[in-house]
Image (cartoon, rainbow, N blue to C red; front, side, top):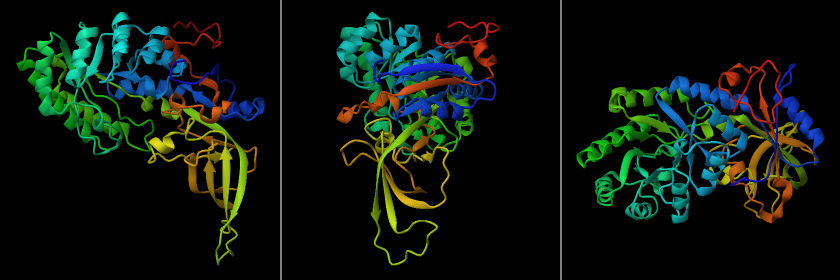
Length: 432
């Protein structure tokens, strides 16, 4: 699978009161100690239904880079989403799973020439740009492309500021459009990205207003734009930002600057929104050590102040927990599987590699763990699997998956989706 590690995907329906935790229990009994994920596909489905209700005018193009698990991609395709692909490998994955080229936007403003050639050969025409050199490459290797100008917008309220790397300024947009016209290229729209995990809904309003300005600029140059891509930045959990609030601002802004009668098609590039809460990661404690603290007051036996416990688990920042480095503001909060112990110690959790950067948590108060204990981490579906490495040749990163559908199958039936490995009752008629 391009961009991720080998996986064993097993899919089942939860029936007779069986829960996700029950599946985790059974997997722990089956496996030696390898880390694994359990994915509840019901969360993906509910996220899709919420999106279509909250943002009826905005068609999601799932950001494959976020989590390229084939079952997730197949399910979202069956639900009618498009796909934001950033490389030849991601395009290949989407096409191999039956996604048609018109459902793909090649949303990378700086593409290798041979990736552009591949996109052209597969009929993937819609792609982004933000500089003149990219226009020259596209004119040479995919002159029939349908181009989308990515603009830089305010990202001050986002945790990951993507506009440091991508996006044309408003002052340069006119010159780029003029150059595209000189090269005989077709520019059909504008895109932007407010940055990952945006915390201010009004950022979208300002970005949509900026896009309207570029649309008007393009019209004066003879372009007839028909596509607005409002990018990503949507959280996968409401504990970080409120999706309902963001939806309201986006809808109002679209009605103001791009009303329905304008004929402009609206898309977005959500990633973590769909998958973050769907995945739970289970890791095993493989080693531990105790560091005694020098303290004058060791009378408080309720919180173990006299020592720091250091634990080593079989996944870390070079594996599926790289968000510790990439998104330090997003807190990882592991919890002990099943066992309850009262006394808590200040703890450090290390990953399995030899690098001292491989620190997952520090100053974390948890009950004492034993070697062989399991820790569970919820909300582990975004930017985990897709950016794992095998640093130190640690084969533990060959994860095993269990993808789950909850008992209420009627929405899935209505959407005409079922993975080929899912056994369902004869009373349900599914098709991909």
